[in-house]
Amino acid sequence: MNRVKPTRFTPLRSLVRAAALASAIALAGLFLAAPASAFAEPGDGLDQILDPNQAQGSGQVVLDRGHVDFGPTLNTGEWIIQIHDDTASPSYWRNLEDVVLKVSDAAMLQVPDAPAYAFLGQAPGSEVWVVPQAQKPDVVWAGWNTQEPNVLGSLKLGTTLTVLGWRDRAT
Image (cartoon, rainbow, N blue to C red):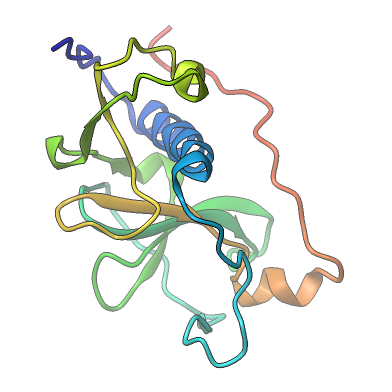
């Protein structure tokens, strides 16, 4: 089997790649998953309450398992994108430059031999690292949210998050 060779990761590059891979896999999952409701139903146990004064994490961390979310916050007094680190209790908001999301070999899958997966840019049968849509032991479970209470209080009709591009710090 062809293995994708690892490259040197910086925190920003790792986050961007993890977010891009999670988005690609989420789209790919649409081809595999049976139809299901995309919205939480009342009483389904998916309600999440975040503390508006939740602590800011400090120091650099490598997160390789457990749940994290990428999303906007206002808890620092300005609009910024942060990582909501739910890998331990208590959870923290962390600055992007302080976080590396490490996707372990436990996340490896083979690219199916189907045209729907051509967007991955990998040959069928190639091994790729997949950030799953559902939590899997020993794999970081990355998502996104707009649930920070200060953000929720300032939005009336929802929000759209668009990644316009990124810079590779290594170049």
